[in-house]
Image 1 (cartoon, rainbow, N blue to C red):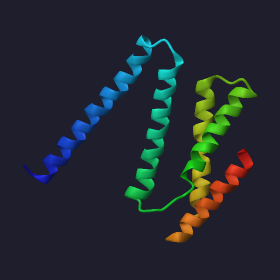
Image 2 (image 1 turned 135 degrees about the vertical axis):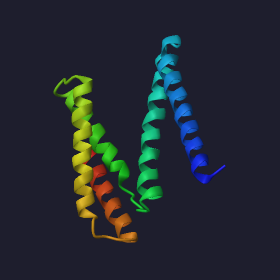
Image 3 (image 1 turned 120 degrees about the vertical axis):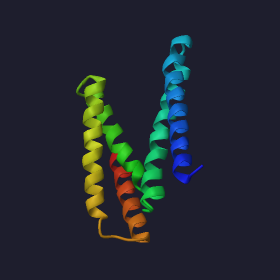
Length: 136
């Protein structure tokens, strides 16, 4: 079996396993009336998104960023504030939060564009600490 076929087989397997998890997590709340399982599933997908972002930034790009959680924090904070204070619909607030996170990540990328090595880590850590101080 060639290397290309082996990779394609793994991609297909990962797709079907991921699809099975999504279907399971969509069906499971119908059988469990409590909020506990829904909360755990939500946390699972949030952390899956965090891990995927870390894999893309560090694993694929090789950039040691310590501020990637600041992007999630900005998007989540904007979404929560739109829902809490402006009484927006959840879906509209999620879209605005996502757009805000994209804009923030673009600005963060512009600030760290010419940096290399440990300087990227220090700058992204500084950005994350500033966002932590502003939000908390």
